[in-house]
Image (cartoon, rainbow, N blue to C red; front, top):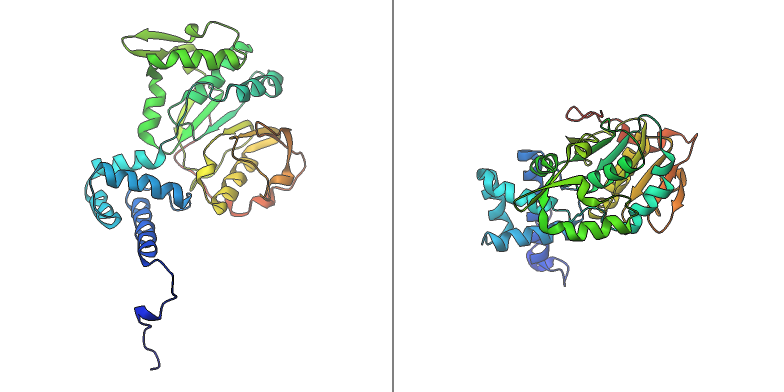
Length: 309
């Protein structure tokens, strides 16, 4: 019959309708989060998002993604828990010490200008930004808010600004620091109070924390170094390209880009616009004289919520 709808029986055999339904539910959930709370996870790796949503369903004893969607639209406390689940990023001071040693000796050692500009994108709770601040301090680069540390999770930014970390983590942080080429006593960089280690003011003065969403906001200008490690691994290919475009536009000619060990520019259209400084630790240097038009729409967006110091 002309114009009639296909029956369920006519759909392709072997297609798991439950999987299709859950994928639709997940898409609707992410759209609801974006429209209600302005957090954009729609272009994140679907498998990663699905695992974190399933974790929240289990922890909150919610039967389905659709029910979770309804509840987060009417319960901001539950929404906050879900947003934390979706934005969790495992981090620590001098995580991957060999990378920080390479950063110190191959990049920052040659950046002894009076004022350099560093963007730590996806800074999470601040451990990475403070690690870079320690290196700058030991290289004799004076604190003038050299590091712009950004994240899209406002609550985790508040934690980063406080600079208070569990005292029990310090032993592992000390090991990382020494392996990364640390030159002083690590205890010189924090004060102990009860069960907390409070980052000293001399390090905090290096860092400016601010809101920024890599999925929706514009980049910056004339950065000497962009660090974004273990973040884009959670993005799909389209968002990869958008973010690499932001970084390309944000860097001055000759500026450096650092990505995570499981990330890289291979397969990206931006691969040809950077030289490889350290293949193992994913350190790149922007080539001079390349056309900025390759970034396409990435440069058309503007951000009103964050500005570089």
